[in-house]
Length: 134
Image (cartoon, rainbow, N blue to C red; front, side):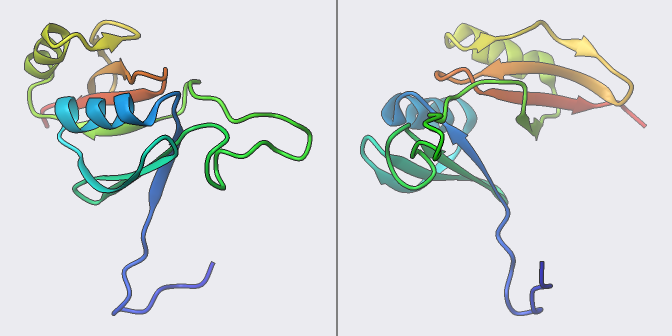
């Protein structure tokens, strides 16, 4: 990888495969505050939250949604995730839960703080994290 010049900011993004673009865009914008930069109905969306660039693709659509040479079709889910830091995890959890959001677990305390795994409409995970007080 070549370093970027001081005048060119390197874009770092996460890509998720989703079952349905429209329901995924609604989930990320309505519940988590993402903004839509670009949406191609039934195929692709580019969403942002602060510096996070989130690209979502539906299987069979666009380059990232195409089957691999061995026939494997991209699918959502798994344990990989990105993290959104929050200042009051219990409040965010209660608000999302009352809005109908699904979670893989309850809030847990770890070495660095509290976290919970939010599930998007396709089964992809978003870690909501509140750092421990220093």
